[in-house]
Length: 318
Image 1 (cartoon, rainbow, N blue to C red):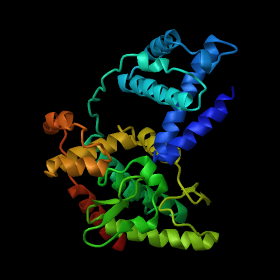
Image 2 (image 1 turned 30 degrees about the vertical axis):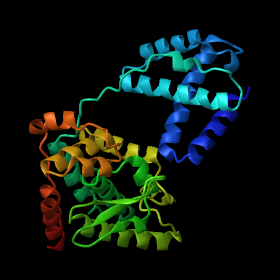
Image 3 (image 1 turned 120 degrees about the vertical axis):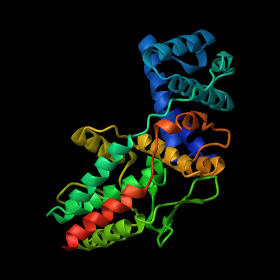
Image 4 (image 1 turned 180 degrees about the vertical axis):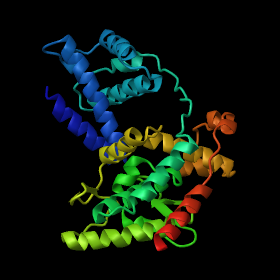
């Protein structure tokens, strides 16, 4: 039994039925967890002999290893889907994971980045964008665009990593288009300040691309302070960008917490629930109840983005 080969075939099937790249990565990562568990129990383990007893032991192992109920629930669900796949291939005759009781999904309490921390980050990015090194300036401008697309547009890191310049429409009412298979494309509105920030970034990016003799259509790139390293910024790379600022500025900051702040901002702007769910990529059945219950504790807006940007632009002009 070649477990790695089966994982790859499983991933190929997920792609054929329209599962996104990030979903496929998460599913395969969850199966890596299952493989480690089985290797820890048996030297020569076999999928065909996996029993309901093994499934219960794996469930117990997950409860001891992970604190998040939703993480445990997802790992069991992925294993259930994987064994359905194995049944289709006649590798197993039954799916013992289906005999495990399904745990209800638990809504995590929102923990958005505080507004004061978002203002701290935005101020720091503006200061960084006026440094003496051209590539350092460009990196700061790249990170400004990243921040705006998450805090003001609610984009996921997977969407950001694959984002192409053709998906962004500028003007007085800029928007970003999200393309997801099998869903139809949809657009998300962005604040007016996004247009001058993005135009400046695109101009300086084009200059750097010409200097480096590079051509690519991704919005974001990977680089150090000396050269562009690759024409795409990975999901992990985006997470590391925010981890660096979190450490440096001592603020509460992750892409997820910025997305949660975006939800609160839209609720305060009285956006319709169905629109918020669509823009965030949530299922229509997703509940915003916990967000609405905590609105008075989490008040957000976009005003400071333009105010601070204009202030720094005037200082630079003088």
